[in-house]
Length: 307
Image (cartoon, rainbow, N blue to C red):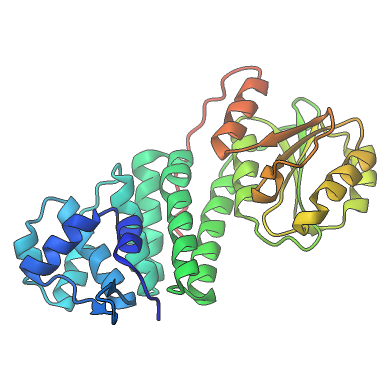
């Protein structure tokens, strides 16, 4: 069971703490438990209900009417609600509520709808990424478990791979070539998969090597494939005090290639970069860098795979 403060609920739902208090007092929307020092604490059910309430409220439903709905009626109204595909906050709230119910069909439907309304990249950047950030907050609060995380990660991985599969292939002899990989032991793949999509949709060729690649393997790959650049993401691996060692080793193995480094471990202030390395702070920065390296605009269309 998660235990949330009212500020946690504000951050997770997008509803101001002051408004949540008013809804409690006037309509009994939530019934928090109070500590011995009279501080409100909320549980998983409170969060789930507030996310559903916020979804309907943001669609223009009166709070007094929402307060009269039973739990079953509330969930049914949210599911049947014709979501506004351009309202990112509302989309994230709906995804969170579906995740807490372990409702995989609704999660898939909501992501497909976001892609249809916003386009694939914007749906990932403005819906999927904030969704994952909210899950991180909930993980810290103890409100999600590995099953929740695996459900969402596998679904998003499936969507990104379907998007990549729908793209026309590029000829490696005619365009810039990239090697994308994760360090040995690193399993967090979503960001690298999305980088794969970003490059391919702009006409670059990608040799995607995925998770858990021993760095020594890059020497042969560098000599055989002759890439323009290598790109990796460091989320949990290597250990924080070994990041510099990894970067130095990467430079030794591929001294004549550009290197693009992304992920929280790279953002440490004491990390020293070789002359051929670029530290990428945000995914939007990576997109901008790729577009600068793309010689001419690439026109593309993408329909989300109905999976």
